[in-house]
Image (cartoon, rainbow, N blue to C red):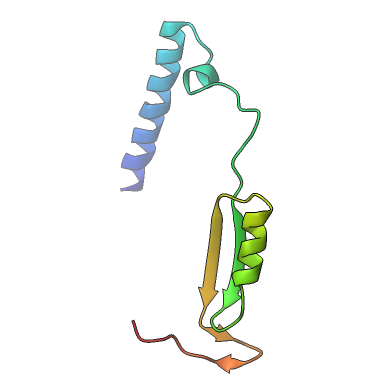
Amino acid sequence: MGHHRRALSLLDITLWDITAKVVGLPLFRLLGGLRTEAPVIAGAGYYLGTRFIDDIAQLVYEGSTRLEVMLKKDDPDRGSQGLPPS
């Protein structure tokens, strides 16, 4: 299956290159041009049962619009907390 995906990827790249040449644009312009800003994701990891709301609120206050929060069930310093029933 890996060879098929690689072949499709090469075909996809080739078609983008050909399209850019036909319309007379550099490929980066055809794909949307140059960015002066890039989106950033603020990431944080917490153990279940710890307080993280204040940290998340601070990130939002500071202007973060994209957040990724990872929760783990076991804190090695506090022992197993277990997950609440779903």
